[in-house]
Image (cartoon, rainbow, N blue to C red; front, top):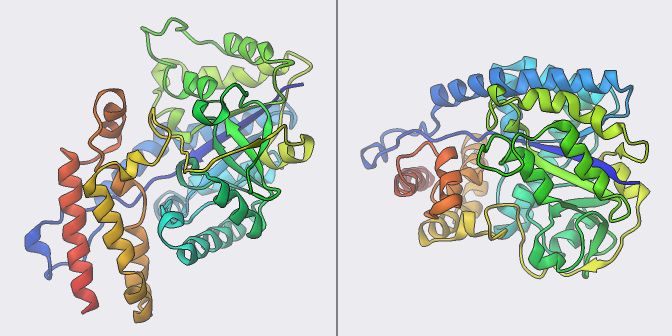
Length: 392
């Protein structure tokens, strides 16, 4: 009986202003409030509101047999609370059904795990408090930024009270094994691993509207048949993708909403299929084997590693610099400075500095507000130097 586990990551950063060298020491306003609000208005209209409405209709239509899990970054929730509370209300309606699980993560969608264990734990606790306040939910399963996972992380999140963690079903980790089972990490304690089936997930999130794809057009019936084909060759099909897949990355004109509308019914046509959320999968299935994640694995780009954020010297320097301020920032006990410093940790700022080309580069350029990665680096470092001056 293959269970389908649908997880949607929902996140938007606080984008930075065009902060020049002449602003250093003169202006401490780092974030582009009008641009952030305009972008969020667009994505709310195109994706968040219609997708929330459709997911709720599907849960009710299928009487709880359809389920979905969400990742909601703290920085996104802050922006929605301030400008688009109707989206928060939509998420609350989903969680009230009992069919929508929210996962734990870092509040600021950061790379803190790599640089500061104490800051990592603080941000996770901040996120838990926000989820408890807005949704009265205590997350049981963890998802680190961009599905970052290694053996040590699995062990650490177990100590933080989580029962499972999401990861990428990377071929170079799995080898001959399938991502369609529950696993455990080597020396990772009892934490269970749910690994993304990237081929099936990307068929929706990336290839859905590609007319030169040999499977185009993708219908719900065709996709459900692919799920059925895994019967006997797996226990859980983990479909992990961005929430913005629906309406933003794949526009309404592509037929993506019609696809989503029909998908649960087509999957549930086969009586051996069901939908389960991550915490339920962990209860239902025992680990099939132990996998070794000696290095960080992510869901980014073709390499499935950290190169999307740490692949060049600009990114490495910017990250090292911002975390070098940790002690000094915290010693000030200045809440505004601390909040600013944490917003500058959001991984998107470093993603924009990536200089990859070809297919991966196209993805980076799509998300970036800058003309070039170098503009992103210069803006960030100007802001860093101004923040450092404030500490003096």
